[in-house]
Structure formats: structure tokens, C-alpha cells
Length: 389
Image 1 (spheres, helix red, strand yellow):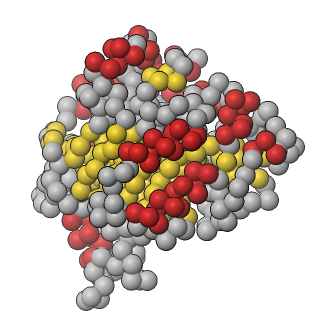
Image 2: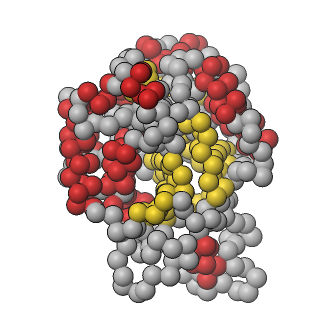
């Protein structure tokens, strides 16, 4: 699978600027370069809005606003699948479930009376979510997800979604080991007939996808036990081939100062990944790291600053679990503990990460020292929890 992540340095509330930056970064990308294109959380609106009043003019209708329109246009042009984050305004007379092929329409959020409460139902029939929409190469919506675990910034305007996403997308599974498994069985675990290998009953390529947004990877409200691993456990239980994390993740939280680096400090280290954040993501995906099955994990983050918030960048595509080899040739009963990276962007660079999961990852991290990583990550989580207080 050819995966492209666009790591934006978005400006708060500057939709046209942010869209233009994405278009500029994608100038060198054509249909031969990409099967899956991923943009960050609230990609074109920006993230760090201080209140409902501040974000209200930037809300978009369910899978039918400006971000979806751009995704449709780009998916058709590049003949790929596009996932993008956006701030959703849901009306009660719209479908409450994942929308299919909605009409793309012009929209002005200011046409709606402002409801100051994110609770549902509301007197004016509104519900707001921090959401993503996924569009296929034909321009049709194939998935829609609403963030389940909210950060304090989200809580000022958004409601919790109904739960983490799991579904099947019309993409070829990203790893050979996964495709071999798909080829041997149908959805009921029964061997397929000759000629049906790697195909659904409808004759199309498929991959099982689990999907979350930023805070979803953390313990719920930083209050549940660390070892619960709610999101990673979901990804494992749903037998995901591809895990898609769309983020606006702040830079290292191991100290108060680290979350508020100066522009000069950030520029000096722009091309280097935020290793603390990378280690944190890996630690929170421990059930997948230790799994016997190989899984591709995509973390699409943003960079830059919005007010006091500095984002960690470090967008990456990783392979977790299994033997650490592309063929999945680990012996029966052997443990996992492997993480490999196809590529990673710097903490301070706006740019594009291109990887092809048919190739071997560039960096192999065998037998990750989970205890050491977990202790550091727990410290970061405590810092984030203090920030929510």
C-alpha cells in the first residue's frame, strides 16, 4: 500500500491558507504515488480554538462541507482514498450513522442559531463532533468517524462520539502476511475457492481498518488504568490490518517547558522527530506491538504553533507485532514486541511523508523495551492530565 501523510503547519481559522498549503505540498504527488492519503485532525480549520464561539464559524455539515468537498476532488484526481479531519455540525434530521454519498453543498454555519451546549439533543437540533471523513477514488464517502475520547480543547464545543471505528475499506491489505491470510479465508473463516484469493465476495480488494483521533489513544480522561489500553485493545480485537490515527498531538509533555518551546528552539530541531512523542505512541499501542499479527499503524500529525500550543509533528508509518519481517514468518507461539518504521517526519517541518508498505521499513526497533518506554510514557500522560485539570 502506498501511503502519503500531509503534515500541515496550519493557522487557526485560516481555511484557505491551510488548504493552499496542502495543495502546495501535494504538487509532486500523482496517482501512481498514493493509495491512501491522510491529513491531520481538524486539518483546514486548525485545532486550538478557545471556545464554542470561536470555532462556530468553521463548523461544517456532516460529510458535506468544504473539507469533504476537497477530499472528494482530491480523491478523484489522485484516484486514491482520502481521510481528513474536520469540525462537524450535525443536524438531527441528518442520518446519525456514517453517511453514505451525501450531497456536497455550500454551507454557512452562521445560518444556525448558536447552541452553547455540546449535549445532545439540543433545543436547536445541533450536535457537534471532532470528526474525520474518508472518501474513495470514485468520490463517494466510505467512512465517517467521531472522536470518542475528548481533550479539554474539544470539550468546550464537541460531544463524544459513540465509540472507536472499525470497518472494511476497498483497499488491498498493506502487508503480504495479511493478504495471505485474507486469501485463505472468507469472512467466516472458511477456505476460499480458487481464484478468489484476496477478494471479498463482491470481488473487490479489502482491508480491515481501525481508526481513532488523537486523544483516543490515551486513557479515558487520563483516569482509567494505563494497562486498559482501550483504543489499542479495540484495534487488536477487531483484527485490524491498518490502524489510522489522525492527530493534533502536542509536543513532549515530560516537562511543562517542553510543551511550550520557542519558535527558535523548534526551528533548530525542525527536521528531527519528537522521540518522546514517538515513544509515547508506541507505548500506548502495546497490545499491537506484542501481537502475533503484523499491523500497519499510520500516525498523521500536524506541526507548528497555535497560541501557547506547540504540535509534535513526527508523522510516521509503522509496522507493529509479528516477527518484524514482512513475510510474517514467526514461529507458532513466539511473542511479538517488534516495531519498524518506514519513515518519519520532523517535529517542526511541514511536509509530505511517502511510504510503500511493499518495501521493508527503514528503521527496525526489535524487542522494544516496553517497561522503560511505558514508564516514560506514563510520565507524559500525567503531564497531559495535569494540563486538563
